[in-house]
Length: 162
Image 1 (cartoon, one colour):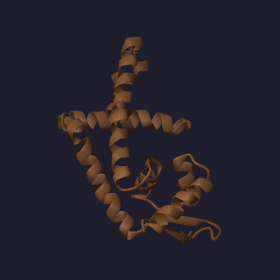
Image 2 (cartoon, one colour):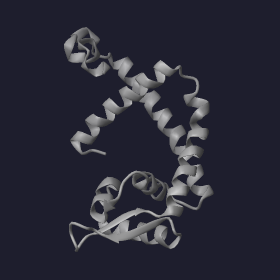
Image 3 (cartoon, rainbow, N blue to C red):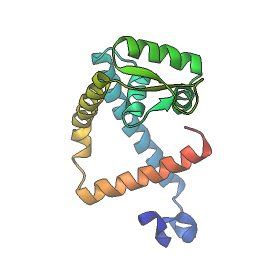
């Protein structure tokens, strides 16, 4: 992994610390990328009568089954707000609530079969919509950017600010 290479971490070489201008350019590029990505997600959500938060909830549940409290933590919302989101998605047949096997007081949420199909179609649509931007990268650049973004996000996740 590139992050373990001594020159990959700024503290290994003080001259490798980004300048204020480099930092500003990076923040600007990240913001513009986020705006394009959010526009795609908002458009896809609107086409399917889903808010951005509902779309995010379906994405989170795509590969996991969570307790309501865990889902609330992932979304950064209170449990009552998440209950309303789950209620609406459950009425549409996208989610199912099931008793938690380890804690009888808790309820798990997972995608229903229709929800899994929708999540797969949605992921493909998102990928297609973002491909004009992502397809410009060579395979090695794609892998490197993915690694760098995951590294950046791991730092934010660890501090609890996401």
